[in-house]
Length: 548
Image (tube, rainbow, N blue to C red):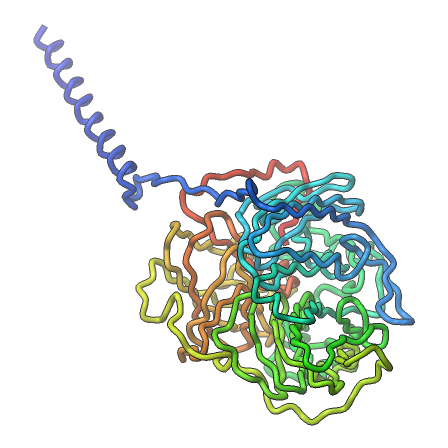
């Protein structure tokens, strides 16, 4: 009898202890404590509320199309609505848009809205936010365009190949300020190869670090068909991410790895809006007109664009520059994924904007600006006065963030290279995606990221963050002065180190990757993931999703 009472007493005591532990854990969860036992409040992707908004409806068809790059060169391009670039989409600030994508191509596709701060549900990333749109299927994107600027859209399904084949277009959100311009042109830069290979030539090539979420891994290790960038993958990884100021086909770069000499000779056609200079009409700007030119780089090389007049850079990656400074006869370097808006007042004098570099194809990337339609002959001009500096774009003012801030998270990215199974891969902190370490953030965190380029092949790394803008705080240990610089894509050249920072204000799972897409597909990707994010999508493996 005494033993029974003793057992009962012990049992009751255990129940009391368990109840106390349960209450403590519950209290921690309800209080939002960041202890390991706390789950924390759920955060959701921001809602895209179209109710009460003017809604622009756009239908885009992904289809193959014969496309003439120059008089003697026609390719089988992959397009949005039959042109390269695809249909230019313009919308007013504050309006809503619904874009229905219909896929008539033989491979799955998607649309990513590069730079547009959409909700995570609309980001267009196969295997992360949606399944890729299969042949014969449709998919609708919808969001409010509440952040004006110059953006672009492109496929994020196997984009290393699909963007190369032509699946991209300009996306412009016009502000009231844009209404002051008499002329407004989007100019999309790209590079192509004159020698095409069959799709089957690329089968069996390893993507080295590509996301393999969903579908058969073995089939995803094979590169899908290419078009104008159908060069050998190993060779192209050697040379991409470079600017065209070097004659890379002849360069002897002693600091690069053996067998890794840069060679851009196969990229022998440059285009603006899908056409070479000789196959494109001039830009018209009459005397006294105020003109905006929006440069968008959809290719894999940085291009040094010489504008031989006095102009101002009004926007970088869509974001306004504070009190823009005059740039006189200067060269503007536009890296892959970047956008620069410039403005000038036409004087009535015709002039030629040209691409500086030793590559023969640079002559294709010229743009004539004329007072009226006429003979499209390039006009010679004086030598450039220098290159535009990021700390000389405009006048200083306090930015949203600064180096003196207390950051909730600090993260270092060593952007490197290494050999893996005899091939070059591109790494973040010596890891390739999906094994790279994610940035785990809480909503509202101030996050500082240090980007350092240590790649052995001396290649540029234009790093692009989805869903956010970041402020560039320092370069090579020195604070960036001048107008605060907000970007979503930053080109980190060999040996350079940048500190950038952003506020985690857009919950979701977001890509952070090099926009030389060959580097991304060979491993240089990671993700920014919000803690306690309420998942809205799961890859069930039914579609051959290829994230990059």
